Amino acid sequence: MVDYYPILARAMSAPEARDPQWRRGVYERARQMLVTQLLARRPATPPDAIAAEQSGLDAAIRRIEAEMSRPAGAAMPRDAPGDEADGDIGGLSSITPERGPLPAPLRLSSISLVAVAIAAAAIVAGGYMFWVQHAHKASPPVKSAASTAATQATPAAKAATPKPAKDGDLAPGIDGGAADNDLAYVFRRQPTFYRTLQPVGTIIIDKLQHFLYLIQPNNVALRYGIGLGEQCTELVGLRHVASKAEWPPWQATPDMIARKLAKPGTLPGGPGNPLGARAMELDDGKSRINGTNAPATVGTNVIFGCIRLGNDDVVDLYGRVQNGTPVLVN
Image 1 (cartoon, rainbow, N blue to C red):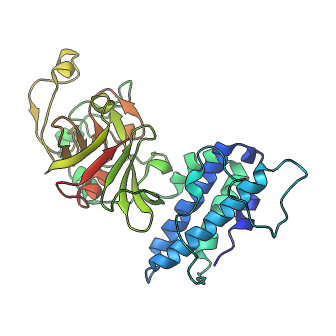
Image 2 (image 1 turned 45 degrees about the horizontal axis):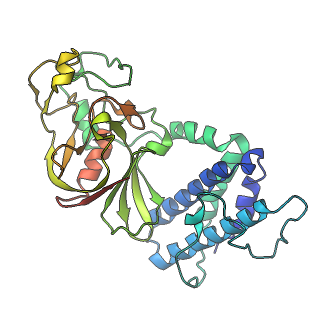
Image 3 (image 1 turned 90 degrees about the vertical axis):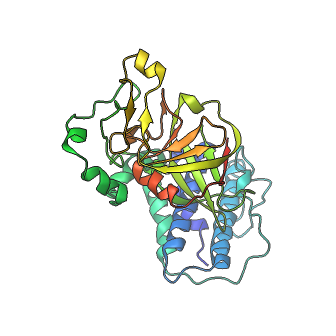
């Protein structure tokens, strides 16, 4: 098993490491990169091996937190195990593994070590938040079915150059593409470590952080960035997917018509439609998860709509869920 302690210890040499929130970001990134690499390996990594590596990383995190919590000059010996209670800082309770004894150690290729080392090097070199904001530029998005559909849009739909409104939204009929190339990395679709008591297949929406999670086995979730419209700012609790539609038509609300933001009538499904490539109606009769013609609004709050994803992401999510899927909104 990889020894994660020295890698994290190097990251904690940065001046920002005294900030608990900064450290939480480092730990989350390390977990995320570890799970991503393990899931990408071929042949597939066994679940007990993933659990062993996650436990090893969690143990290193507890040791780091125990050392960070001690007064200067009273550092814990390097060979002493971290005290879980000492490492308790606000919001870090989720670090404690909910597992029994570790399975037999797994001899991984160097890819897991490299994954976390990349995170540590990026942190020390320029600060975690700077890396989060700029790392996405090195990985162009993969073309999907929604991208192809947008590329083949009619000249009429692509004639106008998108001009963001004050909240970044685009007018109905203007196509902003299937995804935003400048979208921050954290809002791009990715597997991430996520511990929950909700069953596999559940959708969990975190409105405050602008994330949608689709729960997978072995403490993993697929995380999507979302935009939040005012129609759903009060949405909370357990809902279910009631119906699904591909390239649904859209009708302007009376408020949009009164404010001259849209013309009366129904806009057929297709690129430029505010509901995007897919829509999943919830069972409260007024809320939905859908795509958008303005992917740059993912990660933000907007005036109109409910829960929106970029068209690439909503197509992916649509293919993974069924009618009746539980949707827990926090």
